Length: 145
Image (cartoon, rainbow, N blue to C red):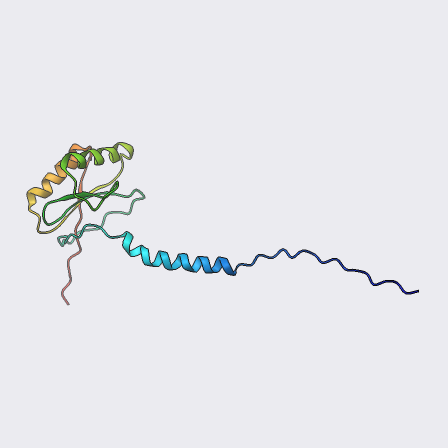
């Protein structure tokens, strides 16, 4: 007598097909590569050149008040950072940030063609909002070779 052939049970296959995930990751990578330069756009100003030491890097993002060539003021917080702000709105937003994070560094980024009075006015507004000190942003001078 011969024994009947045994049926072997197939085990279920427990492997994950990762090819679709790789496709999704590549698409996301392309999207991030395209959108990353757009995220760093802001108000275009031509900073004055000065030979100064850079500030030490801090963990907190600084509060930056930008004054463009026409004297309009912009703040890098909240919605519409690309829209000019009135003095009262600017002070209210800056005060809110400084109340929530008192150690936030405060900087003024002004175009080199802006009259000195407009820069001083911006600094006074920030001090009224509660900034203990205000720094000025500059570009390093060009070295002639």
